[in-house]
Amino acid sequence: MLRRVLLTVSRSEAIRRAVSAAPVSRDVVRWYVGGETAQDAVEATRGLVESGRQVTLDHLGEDVLDRAQADAAREAYLRLLALLDEAGLTASTEVSVKLSAMGQALAGDGEKIALDNARAVCAAAAAAGTTVTLDMEDHTTTDSTLGILAELRSDFPRTGAVLQSYLRRTEADCRDLAVEGSRVRLCKGAYREPASVAFQGRSEVDRSYVRCLHVLMAGAGYPMVATHDPRLIEIAGALAVRHGRPKGSYEYQMLYGVRPEAQRALADQGETVRVYLPYGDQWYGYLVRRMAEKPANLGLFLRSLVSRG
Image: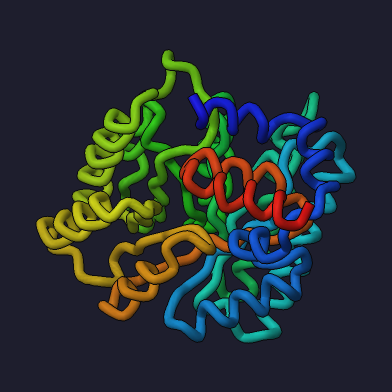
């Protein structure tokens, strides 16, 4: 119930304005968000890379309302990639892109706008020596996102996909994408979805995650295991051994600010660990969804509101 409430809150414009205007603790926001500017994000990236971890950067923002906003999101990524290249960080860093921020939902030719903008980001990433992963959003965008992915991979074959284990369709999508050279991030999912398309219980979602992991680890692609769950991390390692995968033929991914000690421990064991690092001033929806994924985080956030109010 709490998770459903939080996911509803994440879409509320009135609550967003109220929370954004409140004296929210900067320390709490910084724990999950790597700053508001591209330069902030580069500095946070540098620290993570120096600690032995890799990074995927997400410029926060989604559900754009017009073409100008979509183009502005594209330009933000082009600036970020230029700064990462200048800082010599692209060997250990990629970017994650939400197609909604690129214009996917705009009326009329939204898919074409998103494809063109994403293609420009992919081209800039390739020129800088890195790549792009397309974030997955709610289930209504899945087919569109996978279609745009296929278009981009014709020119940029390393473009990464994201699949969500709470969707009933995902095991089949894993089979389709577990091919040579295909980078696939498997996560649980962070949107409110109906039971007709998504598993509702935690145990169901976890069992689906393990089934999907089986498919990806047995396939010829490059699995990206996005979870903080120690049980699932252990299962992923066991499946890698079972399928003869050496370290470096898959990776673990975790959110910035979540279980950093576990991130460092895995990296110290020689595993590839990539940190999902969001940045930008549109942090509200992202932060509330993190609360929904792990409601224990809500207490920390609320305490910061009280202490600074």
